[in-house]
Length: 338
Image 1 (tube, one colour):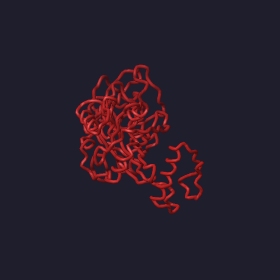
Image 2 (cartoon, rainbow, N blue to C red; image 1 turned 45 degrees about the vertical axis):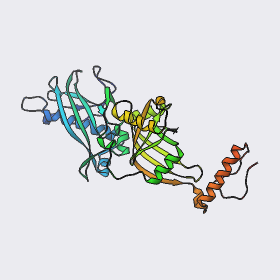
Image 3 (cartoon, one colour; image 1 turned 135 degrees about the horizontal axis):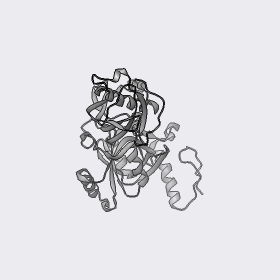
Image 4 (tube, one colour; image 1 turned 90 degrees about the horizontal axis):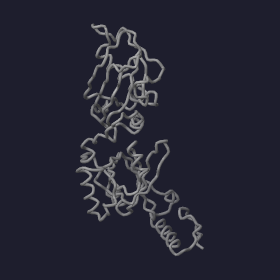
């Protein structure tokens, strides 16, 4: 069976779906003289892997990361026969997916050259860590490509695995990380826009949910929420403005809008004294990585107390209405305060 480079759409099928053409060769036929059951499954798999390769994620990348797609359930619905040497077009779309990409249901339609739908293959699956031999969420680079697969009409967001709400894995958030977040009550959240550009938004509702999750309440962040619905990857920075110490967090977001998890999150914020009536959604973020960050001023040999003192004077001068021209990050003796 040989794929062509042609990607034209047939008039009766959904033009927004990814598609490739194939020739139904001798090896695809069964005893009854039409394309056999396993050939449909193989075509569906070929198109899915072709999508990843054409979007910069080749088979060698799967091997490098030791990860592969696995099917937990698959069904085929037939509508017409495909005969020897017929040209068929196979499409690819996502019917449902969890925010982290760990669970999904995908659909491949097989169309005849005459524009008739011959069959539909629907597959439910996940991603297998080929070393640990267990199901995992795809890494960010794979998840970013997977998010580009066209979504079918009526696309459904699947709930994440239970671990996203009650994760028993090794704690990521240390006591000091929690302290900085609780003290600062402000984080800068970076998401990815539809055109690939970054979006940075401060959130005053940032909170520690548990040892592996952060949260924020959406009051007036339509751009952030729109980005997260399309791509759940998120980067968060929380910094102490006086000591210039802080942390960078990378994670995957889950948007809570209703149901028991949402109600639980509302009670969580109500107990903190937040005005929950202003919340539209609550975003729960599973933290995958956390790193300590600090100012280059420490590289100059300055101590934390020195840096704190310089920034305290800086903000005190601003509060007093004075014009500040010096750079508190640079250990020079001039005050620079006028």
